Image (spheres, rainbow, N blue to C red):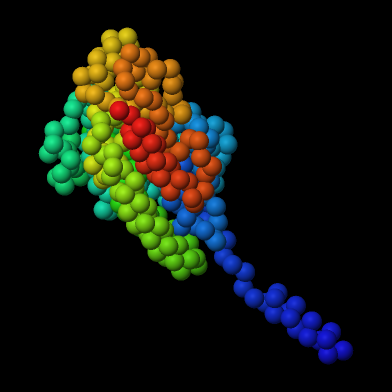
Length: 343
């Protein structure tokens, strides 16, 4: 009888105990940002991801399932219209109840100017100092009535209203997540937004942010150590996505095959690059998994340069809290492996 009463009491207490508050519907544009959001939402919920698999935000087309997810979202995180141009109109069509957060405008983000012409020039010695890259240095956001609605810099700007993304982006390199210090600034904004939208889970978000910041600090130290032996060796990339990584770790990006991945280079451009690789003594040329690798073989033919692969959008990785760290460590390891083995 006593055991039966105890069991009934325990069952009653379980039923009376408050259930963990469910997290809000959160949608994120791209994998690296999704990883940061997923880290802060651990134990609360899982954010939805728009650009899945090996797809690239530079060439992505919205699916009906993406539109449905956006319509159900309470919070949407994206980098901004200079990167995910395909999201511009869908975000403007959302109800007033959805909070749209443009993380390129997060306080503390360090911005660098977009490099015209693919930045295919040798770097001067002073370009590797603490002052950044001269004219290609810091870019701080200015609020404007218009912003760039395309990923390519030559695209026309269009006026826009609503949400939190009325800013100019035409001259800003939008790959800012490739600096862990910028990732920390984004994480702070993510935690703040989630805590405001879901105060019942604010303590969990705060604790997750603290844990994430520790991991990002450790990642920063590890990457500094990883690339230190090869940071003075020049290399060429598929498109100019690595300026933030270069700026943080002082590696030598000699140039890119194309200014923007939407615009593939012609024969004249490939010939230019081939000559430049020989002139600069670039030791490695890196492809990206989302784009045509044959171009890499064309430009290194007849040169001593080796080929490798970098994945700045984590197209080959599974989405989740660990993806950001796997992506960044993968970039560091790929650079070290190829550049150390090159003559």
